[in-house]
Amino acid sequence: FFIVIYDPEEDTFIAYYSRNHKWVASVAKLINSFKILANSLRLMFPERFKSEKEFAIAISSGDYPAVSMIECIRHDKLPCVSEELNVAPIFHFGSVFTENIVPSMIAMPMPQGNHLSCYHRWAQHGVLCNDYLPRGLSNPNGLVFGDTVGLTWDDLIPSLVWRGTDFSYLTKMKPALRKPDFEKDVKGKMNRRIEEKESAVRAIRKSYNSLIPRWKGVVWTAQAELEARKSKEEGSIPWANIKFA
Image (cartoon, rainbow, N blue to C red):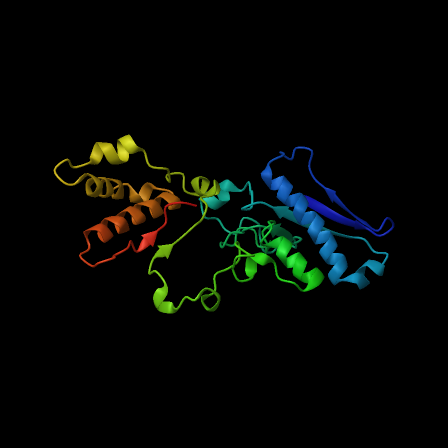
């Protein structure tokens, strides 16, 4: 978390942060956000920097907001900050809560190459990053467009794909959520009278409601793979592929 101040006398931006700030990966993201924000403000609002008035803004960064109002969240006493308070906006470079936990928090682009840096490149040069251009031999990391790779709608594979992250705040909001335990959730509940994989899928489904989202996805994928294997249709594929982040 930074308090960013523009000093008109020195014509420079200064970031203030707590000495108790732990130096973790999100701090590097915060520094990158600060640098790009300062440059972007000058680029998009040049007239503002001809003024002799200073200004200050609050910014934060990270995959999710590192809030400390855990009891407020856990007991659903939202919002955690009263909307009646005239609080300054916080520009958070990363994901924000869908719930109205901190009303003044504003979602900004993720501080990574294919998000914030690409926005900045567009503001500077009006040019798209390679990440958003068609994929090809000279651009292997680009996006796949049907008309550039010769795919039609009928060529697409009907499968549900999800790639995401289970953030640590989930277990603070929902303490009962957990990763599966093979001995407890699978091996100890398997029915030896039926096929091993099917027995394992049935066993872990009994713990479904206790699992964190990523592992819920693993359960659905295992179920889909089992159904595809049992299907009599030629070339049948699993309808879900949600194994990994």
